[in-house]
Length: 190
Image 1 (cartoon, rainbow, N blue to C red):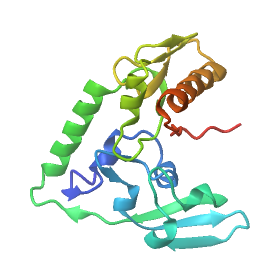
Image 2 (image 1 turned 120 degrees about the vertical axis):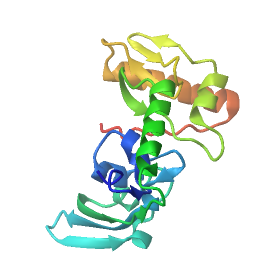
Image 3 (image 1 turned 60 degrees about the horizontal axis):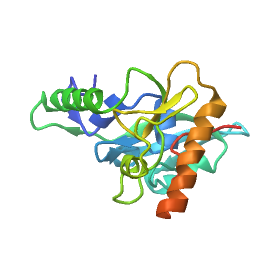
Image 4 (image 1 turned 90 degrees about the horizontal axis):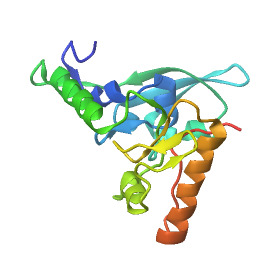
């Protein structure tokens, strides 16, 4: 709706599944943009029932992280800052390009928990997984996507343990063979 009105800077959100609270929590991003680029402030409800508003500077945004990974509470609102596009249709065209690119390069029509590992500086996680030879690798009902190797997909009968086992196999081998500490992008709740 914002893009239809000619607003820009939020287009990257069109290809990220989830909620706005979750996007803030993990500083979600795509196509060289992330929540920290558009957030002005966030209001959250503390576990004691107090509403607190934090400015962008107080949110401690980092790659796939924010202060909310340390705080207990519920994000209830966000103020975002957008720009008016110079060409009114440009934001819609950008969204169409992002969606087309995602459809062509990522396994969006299969069961997965999304992007598996965080990128490390300029090194893309999928490049590490590829270097280890895991593209297309199958473990029980779980497979490293042949379309984008930073996705572990469920072929329909995999369990949580299957997903975690394959994830840990890749992490271990990255450490042993490449001395790279892969960090999971998923929020795993035990």
